[in-house]
Amino acid sequence: MTTAAIIVAAGRGERAGGSTPKQWRMLHGRKVADWTIERFRNRVDHIVLVLSPDDAEAWAAFASSGLILAPGGADRASSVRSGLHALARHDITKVLIHDVARPCVSDRIIRDVLTALDTHSAAAPGLAVTDALWTGAGAVVTGTQARGGLYAAQTPQGFCYDMIAAAHAAHPGGAADDVEVARAAGIDVAIIPGDADNIKITRPEDFDRAERIMGTDMDVRLGNGYDVHRFGDGDHVILCGVKIPHTRGLQGHSDADVGMHAVTDAIYGALAQGDIGQHFPPSDPQWKGAASRIFLRHAVELAEQMGYRISNVDCTLVCEHPKIGPYAEAMRAEMAHIMGLRTDQVSVKATTSERLGFTGRSEGIASLATACLVKP
Ligand code: CTP
Ligand code: MG
Image (cartoon, rainbow, N blue to C red; front, side, top):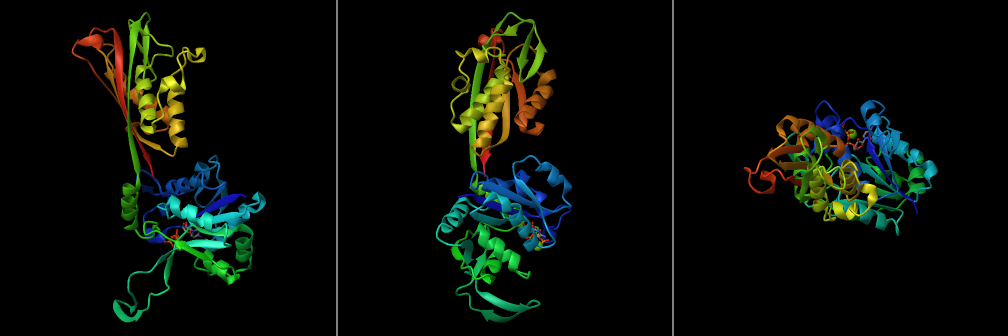
């Protein structure tokens, strides 16, 4: 059985205002579309992202993302059809169709829709209406409407691929969603419980609501790292990826980058995944003299695989010499580059220890680091 998700992202987001379509605007530190896509990663075998032919920047940004890209049409239904078409040769059994503008969709809903498709040809999340309903004209109530049996429709809406592809091909157009298209083709649609947090960003104020929902939902993790390397012979040290001329070198089985090691351990710590020594044993000759960026990249990739995003790292170097200040900006830039972060997410600072202790006697350099990781 092969599953897919089609994320329709070709709309212009006119009701949300702003100069950029809502899916490309920032929400809690990332683009709306990135949040939505992440919800489906590792949940389905293929993800199709339907993009407007006008969004050249998005086409370029997702070119090597591993997603299948498809061009959107003039209305939502034609964008969905394009997404279905892009899956035609992938032998899909179950397909989920989702609005990019619903970045807060829960794992539970995605799971429930997929599970419902084991026993139904179509299933979609709906929220039973609980508010009283009125009809109105202008600003005046003209009547009331019974709410019994009424549901607010959400996405992802799930279907047996062949059936929804045929239903869309046969539909004359003008449907509100894919459930309407399916029903027009005689397909029964099961309702699974929706979620009040699964909002569709539609109007400007919905960005604030979505931020609040994400803020309460997040798994935020902190990790700390600590490392020490002793001084030995040499004419330079490497700290946070930057080579600094010095009267001595640091000893260690790798390049002895004490700062980068502490940052790497902070990330492993946040993930509860041990430390550098476990992932790269000092007893293994292949890591002798290794560039520490290999360790840091490994920790960053592990975080990505586990669904975490690094929010920031902070590193403190403890030494009397060399002086760190002149190199701190270069260190931030280098570590940000290695981690795929912005420089403002990476802090490097230094302190002496008032000539006290081993760092004070210049026997070695110590480093402490903290990393903050978040999972939406
Ligand atoms: N959509 C699409 N192609 C279109 C129109 C809409 O892929 N031609 C997508 C939107 O990107 C969105 C979803 O359909 O994810 C639901 O549509 P809606 O919330 O109406 O988004 P927009 O059409 O972008 O917003 P607006 O109607 O305010 O312009
Ligand atoms: Mg629209």
